[in-house]
Image (cartoon, rainbow, N blue to C red; front, top):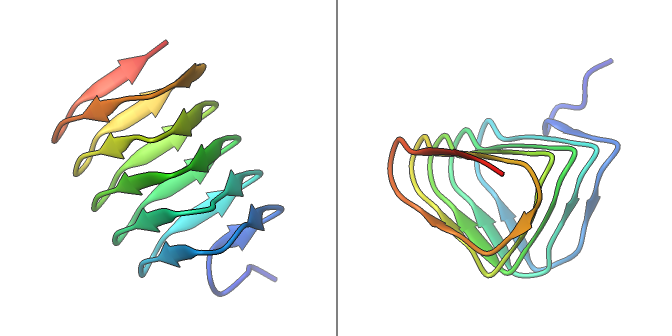
Length: 90
C-alpha cells in the first residue's frame, strides 16, 4: 500500500515542512528544509534548503540551496540557487 504522505524509504530530520502532494523516495531530508506543493525528491540528500512548487531533485546532495518553481536538479553535491523552470545536471 502506498504511503498516504508520499514518503517512501526516507528519513526526515526536523524541522522539515512537507507541502501537499510531495513525493520523497530513498532520501534524507532535513534539517531546515521547506518544500512547497508538488515537490519531488528521489535518491537524494537535502538540508538547509527551500524547494518551490513543483521542484524536482534527484541523485543529488543539496545544502543551503534554493530551487525555484518547476526547476530540476540532478547529479552530485552542490549548493545552488536554481531559478524558475530551470534544469541542471551535474
